Length: 130
Picture 1 (cartoon, helix red, strand yellow):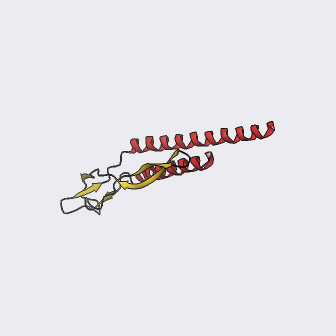
Picture 2: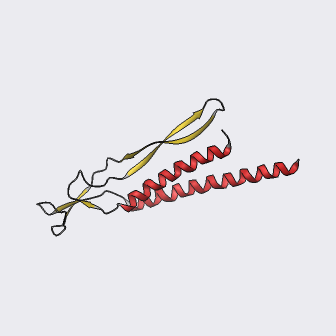
Picture 3: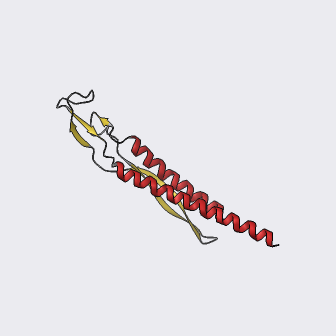
């Protein structure tokens, strides 16, 4: 496993993380007719991958799971999805937390790109020495 494959795995993991946050943001404020139908935020779950031959450790996405956060019941009798009591269920997405999640994933992705750029430059400099 070389630096480029390690970086690729890290970048892929951060993209999954960013896509999950984007999906959550896209569904923020969405309403449903029942608690079971309401959108619940998703999160990427990472796991460590150890290459026993080289001793190098990388990351992989183990799964993408729905959070167990309960949706909020809101009284809106005029809404087309309102039940007999005039209530709808709103997704429990915290928009601020999702923006922080996206920024963190984006920064991690940028850090990996910078590391790759440095690695490439060092390789080119090494080849010029010969």
